[in-house]
Length: 397
Image (cartoon, rainbow, N blue to C red; front, side):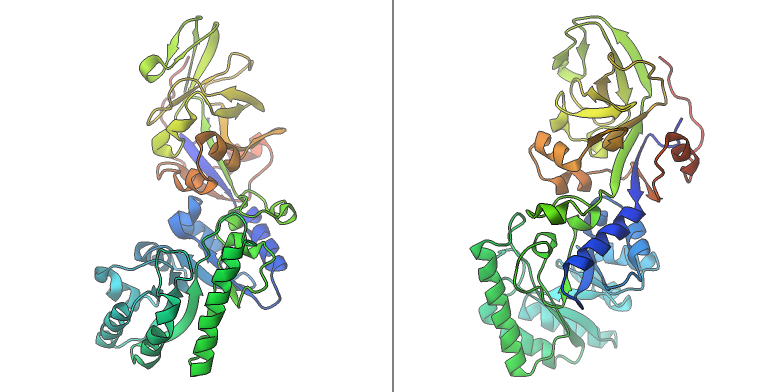
């Protein structure tokens, strides 16, 4: 029996491998800002950052908000951290006190941050975000030089970076991405002509990294590709990456049912023949989407078992009538490999009609993350379990 009702194996060797592949794909001297926002896309930001900190070519970490940045600092991450999104007023002081860099999007925010930095007797590192076509956050290219001048003369601020965000997540070889690139290059050139020095310039996300864009500047921001999930249209690059996350659970209950037995809420599934139904303790609160009801599958003993009935908040039922020997406490693979078969994040995203990002980002907080080298056999897997929970009874069939 496993220690957790549901857990995510985080393969740190695969994570290092992916960072190495990204580094090898880039021009020499390009540094990497590992994006660990949204709890490292569901993989566990602190464990990921602790493992990658100090890796060759790593600039630091990109996060989505102040809370994520402070979590890393509280977890003893000393590398540079940049908040890629907006920050809220009440967190400015904590950001300053913990040497966290921020993106700025307007002249008003520049003035506000400068005043607060002076009040704390500190200098705050800021990156000017330019909206070249994403339409989300950032100053327009036409106003960028004006805002840049304000940053350059602000005594409480250090002009540490210039950034933009590409809108495409599929193919950065399209004309609009090239248009964004040219707009960003013009802003960078304007700063050079004004004599405003900016050490770090970054634009490329995972899709852009594995592309034929003519320029990546001196820092890139890979996110989803770090975790081995397809984020580019170049098969050669995509095939070099290894999945970092495997999502597991276990059988907690089984019962034999007759033909015509309804399964799950609202009786959306009725068994066409006599079979055996297994209940697994993972549901939409854990990140297994309701949209996978009677559409998804899991792996048990190296075989596929279809999801039957509606996925509920805490439990999902699967048909195991064709798999002999299954016992209560048996490992169930929701994402990952079991024997010769594999379920990918991309497969679940297709079935649920969403994007791979949503699948891993939705994995809930009660799913335990178990980070380390992932052993290849069942016996080793059980020996590796860490931080055991108190013993509890598991219902028998």
